[in-house]
Structure formats: C-alpha cells, structure tokens
Image (cartoon, rainbow, N blue to C red; front, side):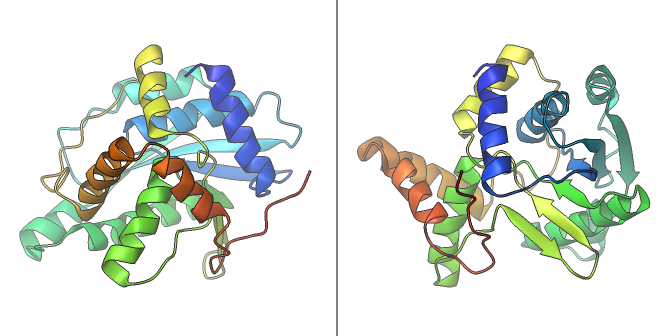
Length: 242
C-alpha cells in the first residue's frame, strides 16, 4: 500500500466519525509493532495538510523488558518531527513474577492503558490514537460473539469522562495485509514483541479462524466489517453524512 492510499483511508475514517477537532493534542500509542508505526506515519503526514490543526505526541509504554531498543523508533519519530516519550513500568514483573497470571492479557492491557493515560495527561493530550485496523474490528466482533455471547465491537471514538481523554481509531478502514505491505515497503523499524504470551491468545485464535473462513468463503471479512459499521452498537457515534 502506498502512502497516498494510507492517508486517504485514514482521513476518510477521521472525517466519517469526527475524530479530530481544531487544536487537538493527540498521543499515539506506540507499541513498536507494525500497526502503531504505520499509524504514526499516517498521522504525521496527514498533519501537514489536514484542514484542522492538531499536535502529535508519541508514547511507548515499556512493560519492563530491558532488551527493547527504542533507538530506531526514536529516529523515525525525529524524522517525522514527533516527540517520543518512553514510559518505564514494572508491568511484566507484576503479572508474570509476582501474580503469576495464567491468563495475563486482560490485566496487562488494563495496566498498560492506565500507564498510557497517565502519560497522556502529563503531556496535556486530550486524545489518544490507537492503531486498530479493519481486521481488529472484525476479530473483536467475533470474539464478542464467541466468548461473551453478544455482538459488540469497540467504537471508532470513545470518550472517558473520568480522564477527559478520547480514544480514536483512525486506521479502521485499513486492512492488516495493507499495513504489512506498507511496513515492508517503508522498512519500518518494528520491535519484536518479547512477551511470552504473544501468539498464544484468543485473538490470535480468532484471527486464524477468520482467515480460514474467508479463504473458504471469499468476501466474508468485508461482509463482517459491514456488519460492524452498520450494527448500531452501544456507544458508537453516528457516521457523518457528506
């Protein structure tokens, strides 16, 4: 996927759900994976010509892995004129050594979001951009059905009254396959995830299941995404009509 296509899909999502307003100060959650680095690239380039002025901050939450090297990510941020803040935590030690969680992902996500929100507040950001792409929305829908017995998916925009921070998901129209292509074409400095639970999650299982179903029934993923955006789920904002 070329940059122009990435920017087009990102801007379409932002405009459809009014994700960005004049004067916003937006934090980008940088895990170091392909998705967050692609979002960084997209918003930094969109910032140059988007009609509403907004500022960007990149924030990485280190779970406590000393082996992670952020130097290349920092170089990318510098090239895009975006400041990178690395927040050091002891989340890994708490979850795996102290609590010895058998199902660590939920608690880890909660603690990671808490650390990210605190960093957002300290940097005076009123919004945080997550790098959820189209496949993430589809997978969340199916996970909700399989494991919770309901049909639901996180919305494009979520406002949290307790912190005053809004979460936006500008890559909701971008396929994961296109993110992979963009990452490869632009040689993005992806950081390998050292978490021992990586690749053994319910989401990974559902991802593979959808891949198989879509292979046997071409077009299933697109139909599932259509179900997501037209599902009238709780907390979903209305789509702008232009």
